[in-house]
Each structure stands twice: as C-alpha cells, then as structure tokens.
Image (cartoon, rainbow, N blue to C red; front, side):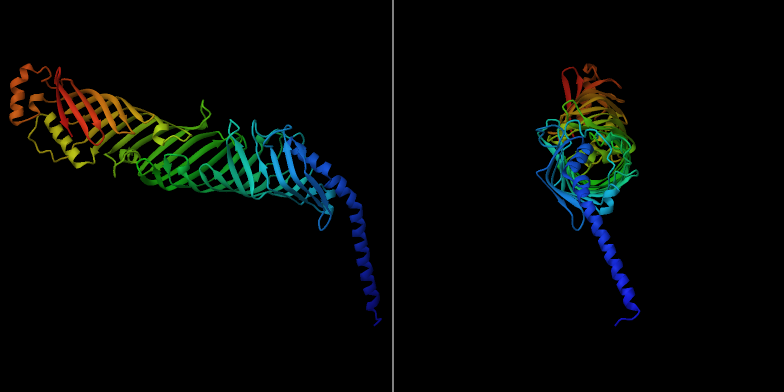
Length: 509
C-alpha cells in the first residue's frame, strides 16, 4: 500500500540509517582512541603509577570494545620499589568500563577490582606524583584485603573488606563512600559511610573525611583477660591524619575472665585518631560502671617495646566502691560498700599476658561510710570498735561506718599500698604493704591507735589479767601507737597487735 505514509516511513528508515551510520562512524573513529589513548595498556599503567607513585606491571592486558569500551588487566602488581614483597597493591583482575562519550570527557564509568590486596607498609602511602584529570564515576572493590604489617614486618593485621564503593573519584567535590569490613582485633563487623575529599593535596594524610560508623559484635575475649560482645556507633570528621571521632559503646555482659563476673558497661567518648599510624588521643571518656560514673582521658600509642598501649588518667567522684571492686574480686559480691572518690592512671599494653599481670595502676583513693558485706566480719568490726572505745560488753549489733584512704600502685599482679589509713569509731590505723591480686596473699604492717587503754578493751578473766599486768605493759595508754599487721589471705586474714615489745596479740577475723 503506497499511501501518504510510505514517504514518511521511508524518511524514518532513512533517518535511522543515517543515525546508525553516524554511530558506526563514531565507533570506528573511537576504536583507536580507546585502544591507544583511553584504555591502552600504557595509558592505564601510567595513570595507575601516577595515582600510587609506584611501578606498575600486568600479567595480561586486553581491550574490550563491546558492549562498552574498556579493558581488563589481570595479575596487576604495583610496587614502590622492585622486589618489594608483599607489594603495595596486587589485583587479580582489574576491569575498566567506560563509554564512547566518556572517553572524550576523560570519564570512566566503572572500575572493578577483584582480588584486591593492599599492604601500606613502612612509611605508609607515598605521595602521588600528579593529580589525574580522569574522573571515575564509581570504584568497586568487594572481597578485598587490607593488610597492616607490624613493625617487625613478620606479623600483620588483616582487614577483610566485604564491600567497598567510592564514587566521583578525581572530581572537584567530595567522594561518597561505603564500606563493610571485618575488624581483626577485636574481631567484629564494621560498616561505615560518608564522604572523602575533595582531593586538594598530594599528601593523602591531609584529605578531608566525614561520615558515620557502626561496629557490631566485637569479641573482647580476643584482647585477653576480658570478654563480652561490644557494640559501638558514632561519627567522624577531619583529615586522615587527624580525625575527630565521637561515639558510644555498649557491652551488655562485660566480663573479667579471672573472676567470671559479668556486668553491663557503657561508655561515651570523644577522641582524635591518626588513621595513618592508628595513634589515638582520648580527649574524654565517660564510663558507667553499675551506678558509678568515671571520667577519663589518655592515649593509645606504641610504648618503648612497640606494643600498642592504652594509658588512661581517670577520676571517680562520689561513686560506689562496690561497683569498682566487683569486677576484680572472686566472690559473688564486693567485700566492701561505701562512697568512693579516686583519681589515678591505668596502663594496659597489648599482648598475650593475662589481664591482671599486664595492667598497671597508680591511684589515690578515699572511701567514706564503708561497710563490710560479710555479716560475720562486719560484726567483729563492730565489736572491735566498741572495745576500742572501752566498751567491751556493749551491744555491737549496730554497724559502724569506716573511713579508708591511701595510695595504691598495681604492677604485675601485686598491689603496693602506702599511706593507707583506716578509721572506725574508737580506732585508727596507718599501714603500708602489699596485696597479691593473683594468689590473694596479704602483707600489711603499720600502727594502731585506740581511744581506750588495752586493758579496757576486753572483759572477764582476760580483762582482769590485762589490768593486773598493765604496769608492765608499755603500750597500755590511750592513743598509744601499737604495732599492727595483717597477713594471711583475703579469705582468711590474720590480724596481730603488739602490746609490748616482743609480745604480739593476735586476732582471727
């Protein structure tokens, strides 16, 4: 049928033919450009070398023309110097996908890196020799590996990157990114997203970055001496070498392995992180332990033995001593309750040693309104207080309040006490000595002062004898310093008071 539609149909097909012919011509013109300029092996190698300041080689390289122009490089190795092992970057397969129009605009649609392994050893990343004019719309590197070597170059932390996407690389604005990875120590899953750049400096440590993160199910038992699963979330902003991080952590069942105690632990922190060398400055940490709030600040940096070490200066004001002691004692509850104020420094290096052996502590403390949680022991303390006031037969059912203060230095599992002061109504003691946290042995010695005479602290036949020999007892005066010692173990302490030279008076509590 040759009606009026026939010419229009012919014109349509003619236009289609012209369009297809134009595309074919454009494609034909682009083929040499793609192979020699856009995606040629020399051009790709040169761009990679400029971006990494390294030397690039391929095991194989081929161009792709359909359905999109691009190339595939296999066995990609990027080294900073010949023979470097492991290399800075290795890629099993690198795929570049572009478009005909993108070639003329210096745009690459997609770069996909399969089997990517990155090892920024030594002094880290070298400076780029030149800022590339190419804009990469999207970079994808799934199932990659980031290997961070220790100083000895024999051991490494391996970060398994499940998903990584970076967009708009090489443009003038910030580059959106998303990453999901497995953290090696403590093992857990991290998801982060944000914006990187703009890339205005050759030095990577000066690149701006901002975003948020979620750290899930971090297994603290890998650190040694502690346990529990930690969750953390927060936000970060700054430069790679100086990153401001704010966040919170929550460990529903934080555990001290030696005592098998589990309890909830929450923290809120404000820190500065150097993502180049992993140094951390903790500007402020707020921790909630039971109903006690602690505030701390400090650092996480290598020590002289190159062990990454946490050093924290802490303060607890009007806290509960039972909350602080409970994690470290073996009983079902803290042996002591009361209002506690303490200030000090704790140092915890990395390593495989048990927690109680590697942690060190130096602190001043004070405990007010203290009570012993063991009824039998508290009863004996009540009785001792009445006797110290010269009332040996008085009712001792009412609990007395104690005051305790001093300085403690904990190192390699041994707590050394100095300026230790203990006070109950009727008696005061000043002592010094040690307590072994590992085997629970006590060795404290000092002086005791009583408000009453020794002879007035007991009744019955014993009191009669003490009164009879009081002229011969050099210490039978009120407020007379009496040598005193506490030895034995935490569960079975042995108390000794010397009435005169060479005549100790022992009490078991």
